[in-house]
Amino acid sequence: MSFMKHFENLPDPRSHINRRHDLLDIMFLCVAATLSGAEGWKDIKTFGDSKLGWLRKFRGFEAGIPVDDTIARVVSSLNPQRFLKYFVSWVNEIRDEQGHEHIAIDGKTLRRSFHKGRRNDALHMLSVWVSGADLFFSGAKSKAKKNEVETVLELIEMLEVKGTVITLDAMSTQRAVAEKIKQKQGDYILALKGNQGKLHKEVKAYFHKCHRDNELGEDPHYREVEKGHGRIEERHYTQLPVSAWIEQSRHWSGLQSVIEVTRVRHIDDKTSSETQYYISSLAVDVKACAKHIRQHWGVENKVHWVLDMTFREDESRIRRGEGAEIVAMIRRFCLNLARLNSTKDSVHSKLKRVSWDDDFREAILFS
Image (cartoon, rainbow, N blue to C red; front, side):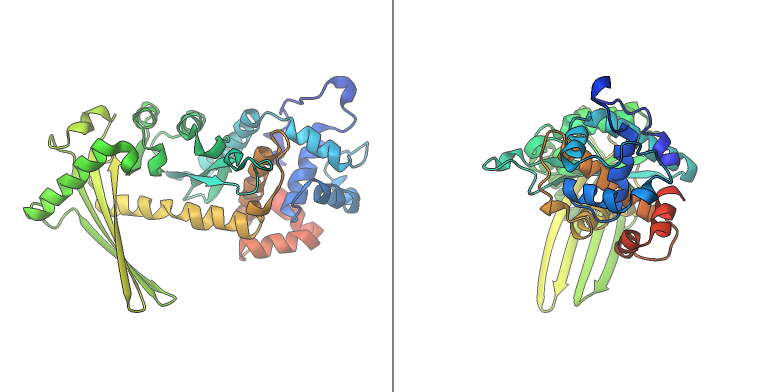
């Protein structure tokens, strides 16, 4: 029960006289039920009632299964930062065993997590993907994408990042983030857009100058082509060392190189293209940087898409207290458990099987 040991010291927000149901029993129930397809408090209660004998193989459940309102009240009163701390300790332990090196951090808004008439209160979660180990977790919430940088800094502080490369989208491209990563002996590749206007303009102009004056040569280029479903996508990467020409570079801790990525898509008889710029603390190694940038896009495909299609996250209406945030982390925890299982099948197929096969659910939880 390795995953349970990381949560056994989770502080219980209830007073001693109000603890009829053990907190770890409730958390185990929530994980097992969510893994089996439960989408809300009532589903979790229904799962518990139908699987009480199975649940008691692993936990006491001396007071039986709590009512759905009790489950909601207890889970929604937990401290998300503390829950995240134990979640990260579990992820770090597995990373230590497997030794992977790339971490991608990207935001996702839970569309139906707002209170009625207050769409700006929708919960915005940061998904963290350890790409090589294929592990995920969520950072603390930031309402309507505000304060995302503070959350990113908290996450980096919790993570073991020495020797890793961290990729982030443009919203998190801030000097404080770059400095924190370098302080913890990691490296970064940060997307550039208008929120860093001066630096973005200088990098764009620098590449334009180098292309115009034919100063690039062959070494800093790399090209990829993907074909499928009637579409061809070409990606052209160019990486250059930072020069004194980019004046803003002096404000960024450890900045060594800049990267230009042009994506050209051919769909039937239509062609479109876009160019994105990045800054990095890595020295010029365009093929390696291309791999990290490409892997970052996997957050959308491997995390957000699975959460929406398998766990129906965007349809979740859980919004009581801290419940939406805690349950979002539980979903990502369940996604990790499914991915870590060695059965040769898709996550979706594994989770369908979990819902009806008690032995397979046990294997997912404890193997």
